[in-house]
Image (cartoon, rainbow, N blue to C red):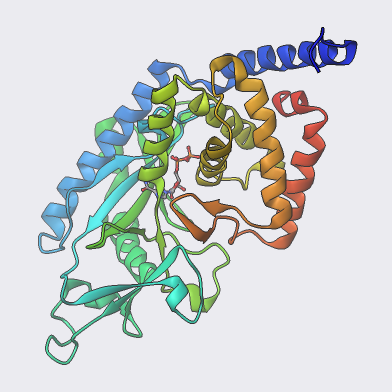
Length: 350
Ligand code: GDP
């Protein structure tokens, strides 16, 4: 220990420095989206949202919804590479005494992070007492059935060509789509994808979204997905604010790497955010100068989580954020990232 750094250490320092530089160049050139581009995309999403509000109020005045709103990385300054997607949240109102939520671990599926929403008191409040009874399947509120209701409306009965010509966009529903998505072409070479995302906020504050389990087996069809996105994003931001840290930058870099590299496209913002939040619990130095070190460490912990086949969610450690990946996908992701450990710059050459 002590003394002057050896040759190997100097060599290592030089390599680290150059990775640090590469990361910042990559960030400027590929990751960050010009603010004008973001503003135009947000404007287009807002126009669509306004049209849909008017349409739904007029067409279905008794559908119990709260006001729809836009959300996602485009609104949290966490979108990368191109401003091309947003979520339109559709909060549904459920009667408290008629519906209850059951955590996935207490069901036969034993799936933490997913929930069932069960219809209660059918003997006193028969079918039809709740507007949403029409979307009940086998005694449970079916997200699939809800998406179908909205799909019929949004894809079937709205005259998008007419609205598009008024707004000067080309709008078309994307079919088939796993959720319900509108494609908005707002300039000749710019497209925005707006996902329609029905949302339940339960009494205990749990947010459930109608986004199907990826490995859609029939027995999964009634499952609602718990969303931790608001908490994840807020925590990342709060930690960065405390220490002027680079977690947000690190997240945007790895998100861009995954967006630009097809072999890594399966990794989601939520998985990457949680990996960074978990790493923050064991690593204190998130200064801007440490970006390259933390980036390398992030790659290593991701490889470790993939080897274990398990990435816990920081807000509920029972939730495995890799549970929707197949073993083969996990292997392939792990292999790609493992290879990148010895040549991280290869990830930036896209
Ligand atoms: P990005 O799309 O990779 O830039 O990441 P985002 O942070 O915008 O996350 C969007 C993804 O998270 C979509 O696939 C959504 O379906 C999913 N998601 C889960 N919960 C929420 C939520 O509460 N709000 C939004 N906007 N998206 C959510």
